[in-house]
Image (cartoon, rainbow, N blue to C red; front, side, top):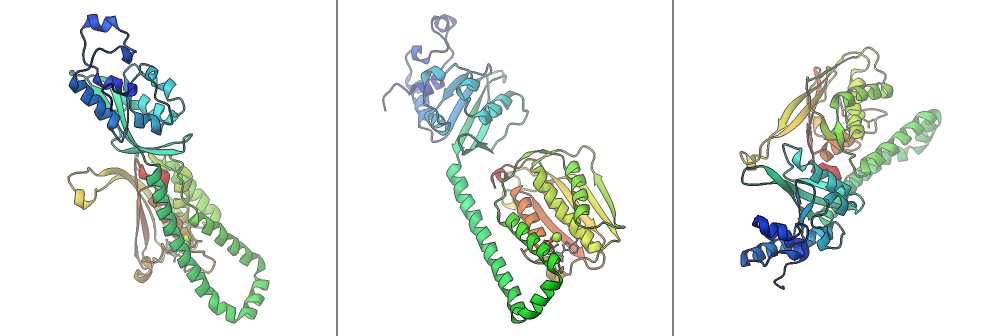
Length: 388
Ligand SMILES: Nc1ncnc2c1ncn2[C@@H]1O[C@H](COP(=O)(O)OP(=O)(O)OP(=O)(O)O)[C@@H](O)[C@H]1O
Ligand SMILES: [Mg+2]
């Protein structure tokens, strides 16, 4: 490697220079830098040899350095004239990066490990954003370290596809099992179907719609989501699926509940399915209590003390219906598990898939005759789930 560093890395070697020297050269022309010390050269090589992308910007929004890996990930051609130019101009093809860098001085808490999809480049990066502080701790710039995760994401997607195919296999086995007996008495079935024509068609349609829903990969449209809105909408949607009759529904949302990063529409599907199940279990009389409050997801015990707990919201959907017997609770999330004549058994399988995609958790507790309680915990900020 030649001693002169690549131009894109030139700024890393800047040292405070006497005012006269600074005035003698343009601040924006790295090519006019004075001769490099061995230390400068070494640091310059460190940045250019990094296998991560690095971009540093100054407080005034101009680029101080960008290494070659950074240029590669952003699909740009390295150019020395980029140094000193506003990052918003140079990175105009990556609006997501412009947004992240613009927030560097506004956010009190910078993301330590976050992921971002660069839509136009169809690329996913993982990044860390830090402020550059001077000796008085005043922020003078920001630096973004990032890594191309596109391949990692493709691998994960393949893994998830394999899981889904395995589930599909289970389903197919379940369907075959269910079909075997009726096939023996196909004439009886045909007679039944003739009589129940429209209902059977409706059920078949519901099965196909829900099966597609289950098999399709979850792509979250993440936005700041108000769970109070989601819950209200879910009750209305559940009412349109299952008649509520005399069931009393009470929703309590903790004052000041934080907005969460999630997919409004898919979360509404989660709670619609839970409330619809409760309506079905109550069969016209009883009470559903829905509550949302702040909580925290404890770190993996292996890392206890190292990672702080993640802020989260806990939503509970409880009913005072017949409950679920202990031997069935393990199976209710399985695709096609249903105890209902016209159920498809995909409601809770879809619920679990969406909660997983949000990095959340779901569990159920039930006592026969005194009701069922589903607890959904959703992190306030979810990152890995964005790309599921
Ligand atoms: N609140 C509840 N109380 C009692 N049993 C429940 C409750 N929620 C779910 N279940 C049980 O779990 C099973 C699976 O629920 P799931 O929502 O996956 O399917 P389903 O409601 O039967 O059919 P669908 O696909 O139409 O939702 C139900 O058939 C029922 O036995
Ligand atoms: Mg259901």
